[in-house]
Length: 253
Image (cartoon, rainbow, N blue to C red):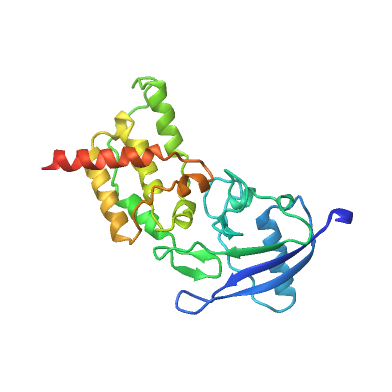
């Protein structure tokens, strides 16, 4: 890697399972390329650990293209690291300096119990989505794309909400471990579109109730969730969900 190689000290949270106590372990990497992604750097660390007869660090990853939301790491006190609007897999080592010490932890939330090391159980999000039920649409012959006319502003808002990848950074960033930004994005993307109207009231009530059952905290109104969201989901979605919830409760009476 020539003269560009960096020396990095890693302080990584190691925890065998959800019931065991965890602790930070310190590792030294001496040949880190600035062009590596953060996950590629962790691959190098794990290769080093395996070669030394040690246990590799468990961490979530899948697409490595900023789409799947799997790469959940708290890096130097921020979800997904120091860069704005990027996931951990999109973070490159050139964002750090030679000789830096980097502290890496899992998401910290009661509703996201640690499975092992940096891997947490985010199935609470899946249960919230499942609680939302289904969308009634005609699944017969394909129709023209513009057969249901939707104002551009509405379509844009729905698409922006739909970009949520469910990574959980919003929960990790919130001091109350609130899932309001995630749930509101999922509620918004369907509430805004005509295809989502049939189950509109039932959906928001069921998803919010499931969110509460999962033990997520209440919204702090600080905006930390949106600030740390890699897809920059807007706080206006939370306001929309609150309106949808009140409306649904009134309609259901």
